[in-house]
Every structure is written in C-alpha cells, then in structure tokens.
Length: 441
Image (cartoon, rainbow, N blue to C red; front, side):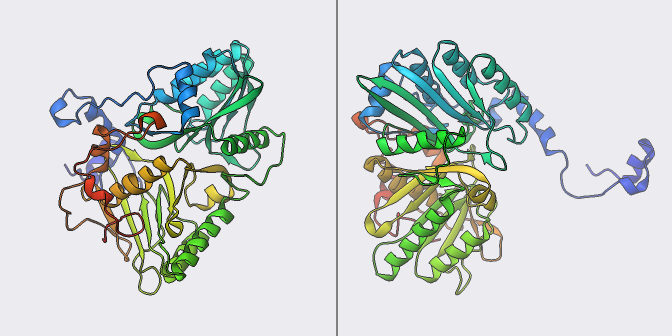
C-alpha cells in the first residue's frame, strides 16, 4: 500500500523536509516477525545436523591422532566443537586450552566450558576481540567472567583485530606433550553455526600445532613471530604468500602444466589482489571465484579478465566458508581459514589460512565440494562484465543445489571411516574437466 507523504505530514505533525518518498521497501527487519507465525507449510522443513563423534572422551583425541577430521557446519553439528572442548576439560592429561573468540554471542556454552576448565585448574588462555562489531558488550561481559574464573584473558593487539578462529589443546601423553588443533572459518558461536556454512578442521599435525602455539605466543605478547611453517598468517605474511601462490600458478600455465585457481569466500575488494588476478588471467590461468558478498573484480573483460568467472550462491544458509584452491601443476594445494581478500583482512587483522594436508580431505574439498558449488544451477547467480548478476541461464542435466545435497549427504570424517557423498546426482562431478572440474558458464 502506497502512503501519500501528505498523510504522514498531517498525522505526525511533521515538516515536509523530513519525509522522503521511495518505491523500495523499508524496515526489512520487521518482516522477521512473519517467521514466527505457525505456518509450517510455508517454511523450510526441519533440519537435524549430523553428530560427528558421539562417543566423546578419548575417542575424540584418538580419532584426531589417527587422521585429520573435517566438519562442515551446519550440516555437521556444532556439537563437534563442544565435544572437543568437553573431552579436553574432562581429560586429566590435558594441561592447557587456548582459544580465540571473536563473535561470541550473548549466550555462549563455549565460554561456560572454558570457565569450567579454568575452575578445574587447567591453564586456560582466551583472546577475546573487544572490537567485534555488535558484540562489544557481550564480549566484555564474558571476558570479566573468564578473568574471575582464573583464565588468562588477552584483549587483542593494538591497531589489529584478531579475526582468526583457532583452538589449541595441549595434552600430556607419556613423556611428551601433544597438540590438538581446531581451525575454523567461522566463529565459536552455536547460533551462527546453525545458519552459516563453515568448515572446521581438527588436526594433530606437528607443524600446524607448532605454528598455532607460536601464534598464541604472539597474540599473548610472548613473541614477535613473523614466519610460520605451514600457516599463512596476516598481517605478517598472508598477502605475500597469496601472491607467491598465484605467481607459481601463472608459471605453471606458461609451462603448459595443469593450472587453475578456485576461490570461495565472502568478499574480493583488495585492489592489489584484483590486479594480480587480472595478470593471472592474462597469463592463461583460469580463475573461478564463488563470492557471496562484495566483489569488485570484473570478470570476462576482453584482454583483462577473459578467464575469470565469478558467481554468488545465496541459499537457505549464509555461505561463510573461505577456501583457496590451487591446482599447482597437478599437485593441488588447498587452504581454509578466516580471511577474505579485502585490504582490512590482509593488512589490519590477524587472520589464518591453514593448508589441508590430508589427501582424502583435500580431494573431497577440491573435487566434490568446490565442484558442486561451481555447478550450482539452482541458487547461483553469475557476475557479468557490466557488474550485474544474472541467474544461470541453462540448467545442466540434473539440477544441483549444494546446500540441499549437503543436508542429506555424508562428509569425509576420520581416516578410519572415510565418508563420501552419495553417487547420484554427484557422480558426474567426478569427471575430469578443467582445474577442479568447473563448468563453462
């Protein structure tokens, strides 16, 4: 219903100058009230996520020690992270827990668990980012409670936001200490983990563990570490490392080897990175980007970005995972973590990208997960050279909706019970075509 400005002026006794006419809808947040109506036939069917390790206790550490474990929220329950912490709290061999907290939320079972651990006498170190927009008040409240419980609380670094998502558990096993790591692309927040898609990697890899320990020492003021063995860390090295990975891919392209880059993240806006990707296209390198939000990269510009394709996938869940995949002449490398390709992430935040070292998980992410998103012909829109997004015009045979498939599919878990997606309709995604099998769009 269109309301005439004169009616508002008269009834609210306003001045004409404060009334603005627009054909757009206002107050979109007010529409959320409609979701509370009891109309189940108009809503998504209820979804129950999978439980990763129901056994808990020693089962958690034994499985991680046996092989890396990948979880994908919300398709895998966030209880995987909570069970990991519960196991650490209950295990008398665990001596320390360290974690970064960015967007905690007003009701955080994670913080309650950390308080429990501190009260049981374990060394608990928590880096809480007080500058997390919209969550400043709750973060301060949680920091106070953690300090009262005896945890070592750090409030971040001057002039830098700590945005990485890391949890380190140190366990005494015999005469040595073993590190167990969780690296996430999303926050330690049970609520957002139910509506955001994020990846989490559990690993006991020695190099990654040593890097995470060094990073926590840096964050807590005990070192000035600038070089890392496996992790790509901003702001000290991530920009330089990403550039070297792209330039290596360009060298493979010039040599006629298998090349390709697939990026899945929230934003691409850094001018230097955009120019780098334009150069990559000019060198004959195919770049596929799945960017949910802001993308200042223009694909398909003749002589500039002919080999770059950009798509956005907007579905039931908010796409939030960050993945960077490089074909590397037939020896793929894949990184997951917290960083988008924005100036603030690369230069003004502490961010981490972690390599996927387990071959089966790496193959799954590169050959199934990314390929599935690149073949989405249901929820995806394609960014045109003129800056407009258009839906996929020609649906491929067998419609592909990644989120719908992931709600019913089983993901790769521990090495002892490697899990795969169902044969149909994803069997076709296993065919070799292009860098990681993307379609031509």
